[in-house]
Length: 135
Image (cartoon, rainbow, N blue to C red; front, side, top):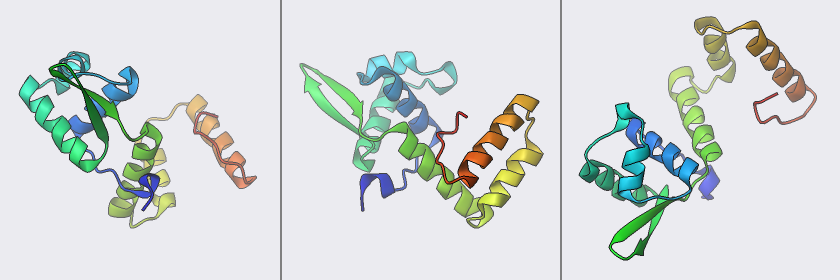
């Protein structure tokens, strides 16, 4: 199975750690801890333990520099987002993408600009294009 085909199941704290690593490019436990939003800050030992678990999952790697481990993401954000949304769609909507989109449109506050952007994305996809979601 290719890396991009793997489903990356990340919990909330793991995803927050990955977002820090995607932003920084790499970091020590202390650097990651410092960059985490306050609602995701845990003890340094908790962050270190989580990084060890994430390394076993294959989403981060590390190298040693002196006494420090420098952690680096081994997956890109787009692949994690894609696999997590695919998993969510499968679990909550039995794989029905239209049901997922319908739910988002009816249950979320969407302003006119966002609706126009969504229309452009749909039109682009109809024409056979693949969009990055930014329209």
